[in-house]
Image (cartoon, rainbow, N blue to C red; front, side, top):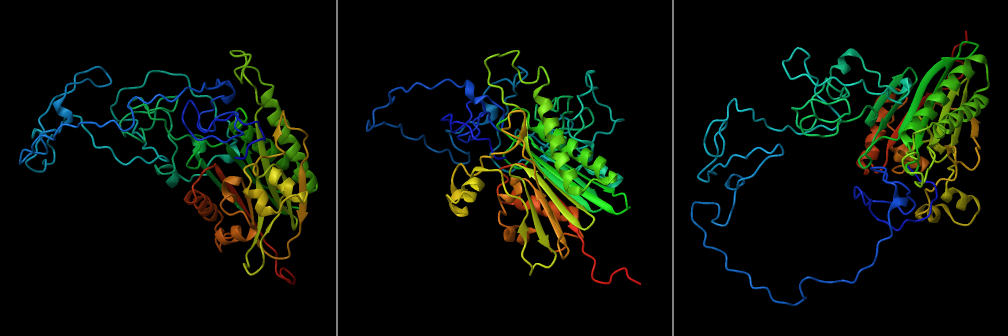
Length: 481
């Protein structure tokens, strides 16, 4: 997501994992490497090993032997060697007189029962369940993994048919095969015991659908983890009328533990709304209180001892966990939104002849420049500082200023609550309306999946999270005698 404004470090790639960096990053968004600990590089003179222009005398190519690949070609089986376990590799002759029959090795010998297997195309979002009755070496006993920080409201709602589908069932340590080699079991740390491949985590892709709300969150194509989180739920007001809520949080990747910050904020805000709305608290006041509760939850993460590594490296820069938040409540004919940061809410009418609208204003450098009249919107968002956020939840936030607003639409439509991982690919209200399916109010989960797919097709450079809430206006005279 967008970063807090920070001084430039002068690096273009991470020195640890070689992932691209932005000028304001304090930590690598891919591996979390502390960029403040990188020593200044010394400039050395250029010392070419070969003088430019020196002619090189290449030997003549050996003559080609008809019927063979090439007299100068070496094959894997021609050279001795060892595998990763230190065992000698077999040396095999390579056939060049025709195709190798199925079930034989390149030397023409049968391979049936040899234990070789063909790699299937890996699906990074799925793992194959292992039959517990299948004979296989049991993994060594290990303590159970720590509970996930993802709120319960974010867990994908799967029916029995979906739970059996490898495409949606997350890889469970000890009960799944590796998605890469399809042979090794997944250990308790989430890695394959055979090839060492990291397995998909539960938060890499999450879906949730309830009556009147749906949300989808995806890691995207560039980040190594999903630092977004969401909470969706429904409750009733004191008069028995329904209230539907959606909270979306985006971890600040330049801060420590951004995934924990977003999860804590989403859980706290959702719980606060579920407690306040049934008591009769006005939805706009309830949204304000929910953002305050979310901020307190994120602040508490900075107070937990032993979480930032300071006891091992007292000189290491500590950057408190942080995230943005945006939410929406549809209740009693009102559409209430609240936010801190640059995640957004859009209003998309069912009648696409009616203009769509963006209901939030970013806490960002670009928004400040436009509001001050120093730049127009096109100039501000073209600047490299455009997405530097000026408001967030966290112990090092300048000042908590929750923004809330209430609307009363006169027609039916759908509310789009999303992080910048989506709106970067559909920034204007009209752009968002074009990518929201026409039947979004009737097919919420499908439409949320379509929007996430739109961002992935556009490049998926950030985590992507979107929640959809329909807003229905009864036609005049409906329900009357």
